[in-house]
Length: 335
Ligand SMILES: Nc1ncnc2c1ncn2[C@@H]1O[C@H](COP(=O)(O)OP(=O)(O)OP(=O)(O)O)[C@@H](O)[C@H]1O
Image (cartoon, rainbow, N blue to C red):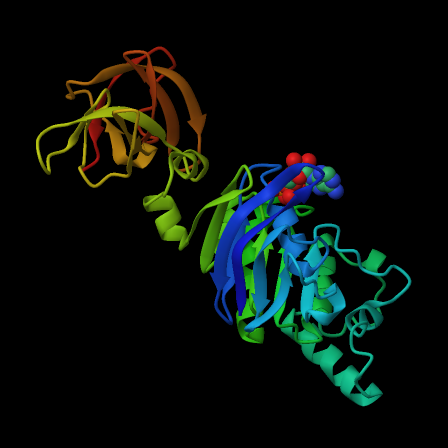
């Protein structure tokens, strides 16, 4: 449905999106993750038709909508948008907001479509409410209903949950995923919250410094990061210098042996392996010891930072025997 092929664009002399390629099949949800300023919104704006391309091509359902030579205006692209500030029209009630893009339908059809959309987002009966009489989550759902009502080929969502409470976000992301699925919508969402992305996405894209480092399932982005930057950004963990202990054997690191198939990266003649806190456990019987320098309560467990030979390593520890800052602990592979 959406094809982005080696797209480059920017502002002034800077290319803020560089040679980005991705493909999103019909009915799937993609999420773009990345640090602030990496170019996520700029890429979304280019797909929406609000920024011209310097190179590359964007196609929707097989039709080129943008290239360096060609630029289809936003309203002709059949794209729906939901932005973080909801931007509901304050002078229109819920009914008026959802009906906004349905001018070509008869009054009866419009009415039917609005009811259908409101029931899809779970807001039946709220037609007459004004935006200021709705909660943040309800406003977000009205914005979604408004964007979905004209049945766009593609829906673009830019940080749609950033105004909502963090504790609500994953639940709302799941709910919105179910709504998009039911509507059969193809959607691309920008977020900087990986839990939100994992709850929503069929494909996760990780952007760093204007480049798309990986476009993959959430599972692979987490377990098979394509670059050291993705490994550092997604989830928790440390990259430790490693030596190979014979063909097919485990890696040797300051934190002990790490399985040969752990994500690893070679640069300048050295190898670094990714060690996540859940890969290790604290065990007094281990030959590898370190000092606890930080402890974070996580509800079901603690996240410890343990210095081993001056290298910080992260490890999860159970609630039954908390270790104090300054304590010496042993580290074992979880196996
Ligand atoms: N209209 C503009 N004119 C000039 N530079 C801009 C403009 N909009 C964005 N930029 C710059 O382009 C870069 C990418 O911005 P963009 O908004 O795409 O990042 P982002 O990944 O969406 O960030 P965030 O997560 O903070 O929203 C940034 O360095 C930003 O300062």
